[in-house]
Length: 97
Image (cartoon, rainbow, N blue to C red; front, side, top):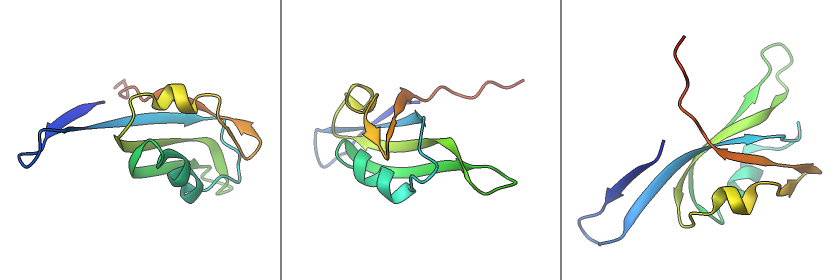
């Protein structure tokens, strides 16, 4: 899910991408993730998925970012946050069943 747009005011292109983030600590917050991913680009959205019954994190999230750096997966895969090594992958489109 990557897209590219070019501003008419500049010749630089802005690339946005959606990533899957796994192996999150149950205590990790969206604010913490925005700080970590902010080093790679402008974080547009972070969504930590919660269990319906308990309201506790299910241990994974998705985030959208306008990228400064193409190496988000290289830089953050296996990154340790709150005692857990993160799994970061480019998000794949959901398959319709």
